[in-house]
Image (cartoon, rainbow, N blue to C red; front, side, top):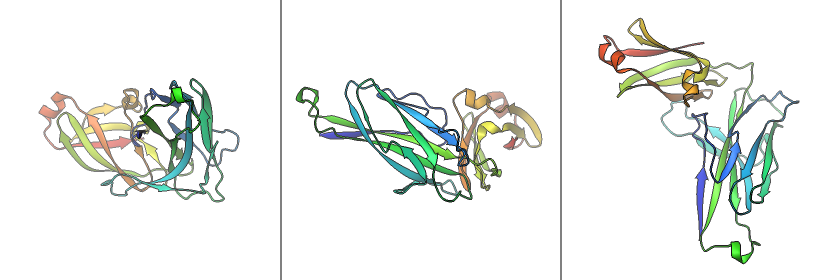
Length: 242
């Protein structure tokens, strides 16, 4: 009997913890299509007590402009994102690099995001003593962001509301470039009065960040203190400041 476990990284969270069975470092890659000198890579380490084999599939991630539905994965057979090797065979305790490069003839007009899926395949010639009636197959997903310095995000804070001790805000990116919450200072305002300032990288240092793809909307969650919530006189709003 075969069962499959999917190890993935939720797209808006950039801070990842290692996978216990198969460790991939890093799980998020960002590079420029113009960079012909540096070859970005991830290291895949097999921590299992058995050999493991993966086929690799590349998907383009299609984000919902409204932010009301999950991103769609579009399989790309002849991908402009080059991934090498196209398959992996790792013995127990061994590791190997996966390299990435942009080989498309044209440069996209917007920043792109791809999911690179390592899909485990059964190994037919394993010795009988290493086989079991139940085989658990793993899918490991990496995220690759194509980033162009010439393209910029254009962020606007939309609908905002409070639930518990958290401000929820939908942030719309109308720009051709991607952005990240950690690139901005966050001002929490009570009407026109600033009641809290969250510095760049502060939330990321606590394990939280949000990725804003081009032409998309993402939900942001900002913690607030009880005193701010109790003493507010107007609707609390957020402003993102570069």
